[in-house]
Length: 261
Image (cartoon, rainbow, N blue to C red; front, side):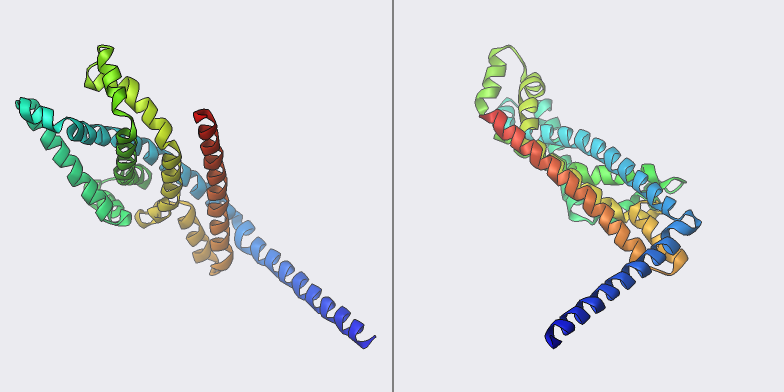
């Protein structure tokens, strides 16, 4: 009987502790996030985060296609162009060297440093950090997307190039109409994972005064002198977005595997 009483007493203490914790948490949450409409900073930051991520991804895809096309064109046709000679080979060789330099710099330096160089040096007169952040993250993402696309193009069977030539297409027409559509199907899951990584990388946009999701949490924390609730909310929002996007990528991969069969 005494043991049973002790068990009930323990459960009662545990329940009281849990109840007290949630009551205090709600009071703190209301004070930090609701009072003064400070939760609006979170919505503003979330909007800027999506705008920067989608804009940067669009720039990155365009840059990635161009760089991957130049590099694969040089690698696949190097010997033929070298034997043929002429200005075409020299131009492609210079473009390939520039692309390799761009990839080395973009992937070899931290994205936050590139962001600050873009904001404080290249676009020093800019009064809005969102377009600058889109540009900086887009240029950085383009380097990784280019390597993803290059691997996808190199994975396409050489017979596809020969099929394009047999249809009367030149090299660039073959790339555009035959190879690149097949390449997209191969690299789409990896490209979606790059989108997820880019979404998380935008958390450093606050270094140039952009109110992204992380900056919004820091702003609320600075005004209320309470860091736990704002940063936990930011972390949960990021986690939910990443989990949803990862689930969608998983669905896409399963759909692509079924279409292969």
